[in-house]
Length: 423
Ligand SMILES: [Zn+2]
Image 1 (cartoon, rainbow, N blue to C red):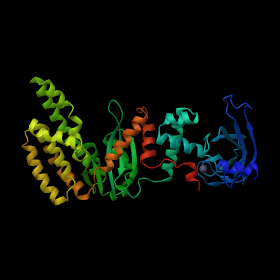
Image 2 (spheres, rainbow, N blue to C red):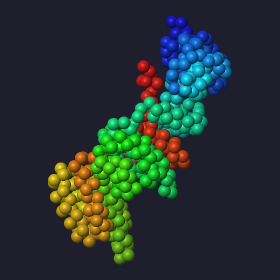
Image 3 (tube, protein in one colour):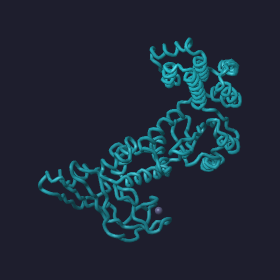
Image 4 (cartoon, helix red, strand yellow):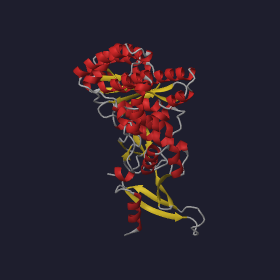
């Protein structure tokens, strides 16, 4: 096999590329720590025609451009690798004189597409700093590659097409009340839209991107109780049924349990039973977790509460019962909800009396959720995943960078490994 043929295979170059020469430079002494450098000179097989590098429109020849350009490619074993080729220009009817589309690279990038895919893949599965260290790049270069790929993918696919049921939610990206609004598709679980802010204007921007026809086709919108979401949905998608996300409903109930626990703990502390108070404080996570996820020893601790602290036990029962009834068929759930509301209102637990009032206010939305089985799975898993993305980056200063990572991972836009995507 000739060297050029081997190189072409090893570098993953296609039939539309011709290798015109190559050099391998570096110290003879392999203990010097300096990596060998492979430089491969290429040309496109068809040299006097081409597609616009920006939009791909077939365009006539313009000029030779500014001479040879270099692209960093995937490493080859211990060696780094650069591709070198002339970058002539074509005369695009839309963009004017533009560098021709190169088969191995995206427009205006100093990296080959394969290297960029690999860098962004690593940034998504680990984090940007890990990818930067692995490829010897700056964090900024990795960030830039992520943004470029996310934008390119968003140009290619319309995530807002064919939506029937969406969940609108807010996500914190930074301390001090900085939020994004995130919209997910209930059917696929994908994030389909995200933007900075949490206001009526943010939600309006989503409906503007959707357009009136696709907004009218929306049948369900789930959200928490936030008025800023509900009022815009009522205006812009008046036919959609508004559902109250069960994820939020359950989290209201766990908040109420925690409020009861804190009140009881304070009583114990004031009455001087320090040991009992301390023990009580440790109960926090046990009380908030789902019964089904507890070990038998933990279940025993909860059962003991029935004697030890009846108020706390009642709060816990109310939370668990609410969670259970959300999974019942609608008619049974309606009966169970009536009973639950009566019980909560009489419970003498202020947080649950308040919660009962809130639930009465949103009852239609809650019943719609139960009827259409828009369960909490999606909001919950997206919330967890977005939390992971945030902590992998140790917080985000720039909301755009956060949105990019959310879209790459949760909208399924992240590139495949280069050898998987090669057609
Ligand atoms: Zn163009």
